[in-house]
Length: 210
Image (cartoon, rainbow, N blue to C red; front, side):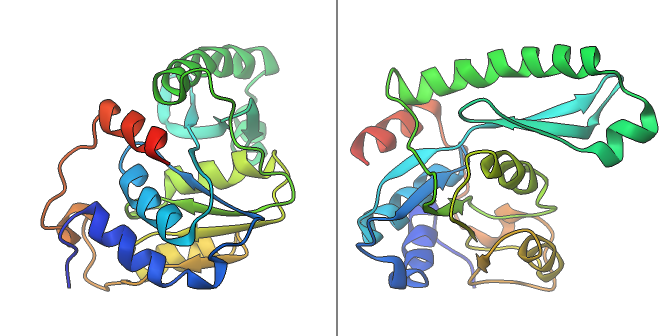
């Protein structure tokens, strides 16, 4: 099975989340950009508020692919001590990287949300949505950053992901909803007929519509 596009994937995903419909304590947060069309369909079907949750990885200087932490919407910051401590990365270096990434995060948030404040998710059930997971790196960063906002429960909802990634994510959150978990997974895009890049304009339009 493959989804026609992200909108169809969102509708199918929403069908797996109907127990949260009309719940005033539920919030849907999308990982931009590809997660936004999926989340929009979920939020529309469940009739709950939606927003973006922008995450920026904090890469180790000189080895940027290695994440020493992450920052997220609302000045949330997560530092992975299992990476920082063995490498002896000093606090001032962490702060420098975080400051640089914070500027990019704020630029993107302003681009997507304008002057609107982020949704308050404290004590809420938060459904984190993306268009799929491969390694889950961005989602792990989002989960860590989201925890700084003290949600009541965290649910990760994605249309497709390999079983091992779903299992790993499930250890970090209250629930994972994933309709398709193929053992022959190679990349998220292979499970969509149409997987073009979601544009910044599309993100802005969907957030306004939400």
